[in-house]
Image (tube, rainbow, N blue to C red; front, side, top):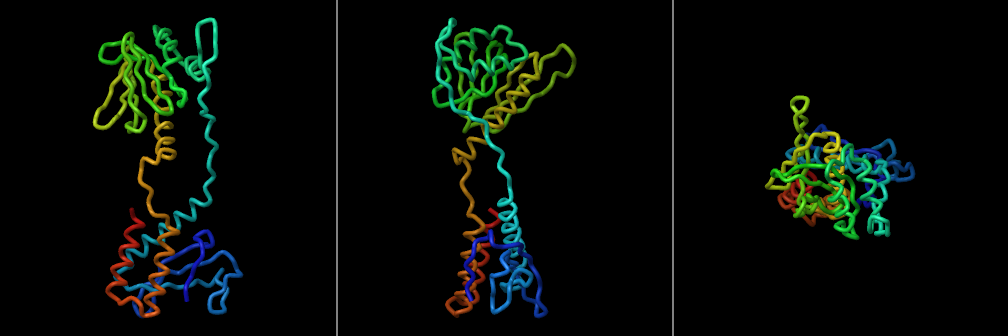
Length: 267
C-alpha cells in the first residue's frame, strides 16, 4: 500500500509502540471518505512501522508534521504598503511622503532639519523610509534612518550606509539616570555600531522598524536557506517504506535512508 496525500489532509500524527517492540507512526486523516483497507481513517489511524531505534527520529518527524499543520492555520497579518513614493515638488525642494511622515513622528528633530532635507533625495526609488531619529556617532551629530533596504547615518558632511541584509538586530540602552543619554546599538555582524541621544523613545521606534526591515528582508530576500518542507519529507518517507515492503530496499539501507530523512526534519 502506498499513501500519497498532502499533509493538509492529515488531522494529526502520533508515535506509538507496538506489543512486539516496534515503533508505529499513526496517521489520522481529516476526510472520512479516505479509506485504507476498507476502513475510514478519520478516527482509525493508518500505521507506518519503524524499527525501535528510530523512535527519537520518529518523534521529530511527527513534530515537524504537527508544525506544518499548525502553520496551515496561521493567519497572516497584512503587511503595510511600503511602495516607495515619488519625489514631488514643494516650496522647499523635492520631497517624499515617507520621509515627511517619519520626520513628523520624531519626538525631537533638534538640529537634523538639514539632514532630513538631504534624505528626501538620498532615499532610493526602490526603498521606503520607515523611521528616523536624531543621533550622535563617534562624536559627530546627525540623523539615523532605517529604510526597507538600508540603515543610514547622515552627518553634516558624510553619509554611512549598511544594507539591511547585513543587520542582525538593534537594542536600546535607556539612560541610567535622568539627564543622561540613551544608546542605540545596531548589530551588523561582526560590528556593533553605537549611537547616543537624549530621546530614547525615538531610538525605540527606530529599533522596532529595524526589526521589521530585517524580517521583510529574510522573507522576501530569502536570506536564510529554505528547509525541506514536511510535505516533501513525508512523501519521501512514504516512498521509502513502500519500496521496503516490496522488497526493493534491504533493512540496513532502509534504516540509513530513514534516519537521513528524519534528521532533515530537525534542520
